[in-house]
Image (tube, rainbow, N blue to C red):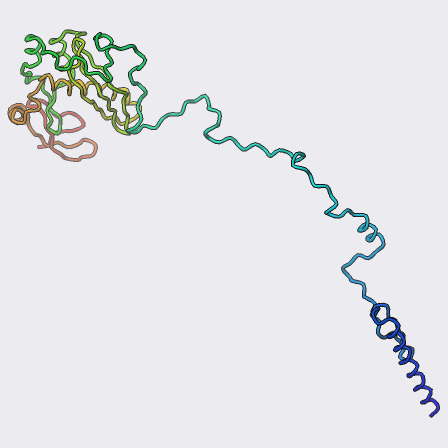
Length: 302
């Protein structure tokens, strides 16, 4: 019994001590350290525990105190910033190389062979006329009777050739001979009216036929080619084709545009033959003059 009274007295003393601590510092709960002497351990220990992820050593605290804050670091002024690197040169401002780019061959580009435009020209002087734009002397007067007789003479039937597809034509050299007989060598010429236009398959250019210092006719010539190496030859063929077309206005070889004359000539001087291609063995029908043999790469079949 006396032992029980002693325990009760000790318990009451502990409760009184706790109440005194609470009244003395009600707002400082973290500093409250009241020992439970009865149970042998501290109760109500509200001291914050040390975190496992926080460096609370004295050295770390010193470094944190001496490190400058981000707001205290000086901000570089715009004048002290390094200039931005220059932009890379574009393709349009790049320095041109020594090689001149080749223009594509199409219907809008030519061979840069247009006649010069810096000459001092005059319509009053036939030797200083701009034939690229002028129509000087067109239909001013007819040719002499001697020249007209040569131009309008019937063509020689032996001079006419026939293509495998049946088209009749007069070789361009025969036109030149007729012009030379009518006007004399040097009395006529072909003046280009612009630069040559080159397409992927054809060369074309406009020419003017000038006779004795006055314009007679204008025509556009054309000539096909198969490889770029053939463009020079095609340019010459284009000129000859324009000359033959100009000669139509002078009445040269006008029979070749007369359908009735063509049918009569083909019935009298030409024949059809069935042939076989030597390489491909393909059979077809071609036209040729009577008495002419079939030429390679065809051979006549029976």
